[in-house]
Image 1: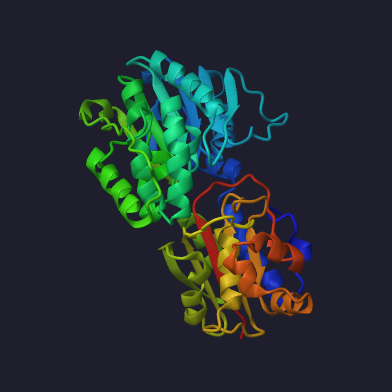
Image 2 (image 1 turned 90 degrees about the vertical axis):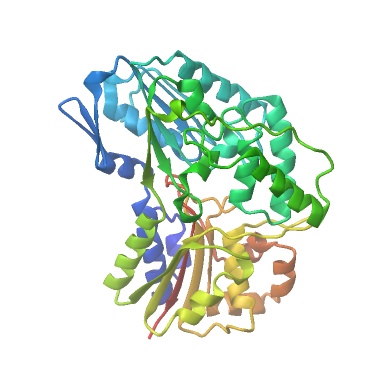
Length: 435
């Protein structure tokens, strides 16, 4: 089980079914299993999904991991390559849970800070750059690029300072990931295709785990291996918009242009390795198996977190399982409480008078990587939650207003906890309505 408190949450038959659907989603993005299922070696040829790489063509083979989940993904690939691998470096928020199965030589797993970069991230990034710089025209670099890489990959103290302030202030003001990462690209020498420029003329195969709107691969981890179509002017416009609307940035940042010479990208292949399509499809299949009529509402849902589940509830007829993926936003304001987007979505769904929660309906929203800005992955909400909150005399609106959703669901016992061994592919949502 990936949901570690499954039994405690399954307080009713309908809850158990809902959690089984969520578990199916998590299993579809289990890092080790996904890498093993999608990558294999046959007669010295590396097969990645429908793409084949002849390893005989290359003198040395390197692995790079950048972002949340990239360490375990890199370790799994390193095990597949075995003695063919020259060196592996991965930068993640934690080291992979390696055991006796992983006897990996020449591999280094570095830990950085997230969501705010630090000196620790700069030191780790410099190690990656040093390895990439040594790769020659007859060498192959295989990289896992995952969500969270925008914070983890940080090339200088100048970038560090600007990124920290911009992320904090623009996130609180409700900036979306596309806006944030457009600016990040133009503050960095490694993002926005910068890492590919450093690696040139080596061959690069980039396996991208998408956590962004419409799977725009250039925005995942701010696209370190992908040609950047945004410009310095685009980044300036975004900064100007938030300065005008919120008056939140007091200094002008020195923005850079990302590499635009296409010669750096001729020997690069960027592959969508996994996205929220896999868990959403798995959830739909499980729902059907359990007797529900699955409805995939959206793969790219966006909007204010507290209201995001309302259209799913309205779309859910009796016997339906409405499933969605996406990334919401929260305008935090000053001194917010503890919580994340998914908890906010669930509390908003059981609080809004527009959609009173009937006895036969459950709402769930959860982070695909098991971390909803807290140690919890998300929350489950239904009539049991409402009854418990009323018994405890909890003020629904007060908790929602100050974004203290973690503590609300902690008191009702409805936080979802999950093992941190799954890919980050966006938030995932379920509305289940029994006949």
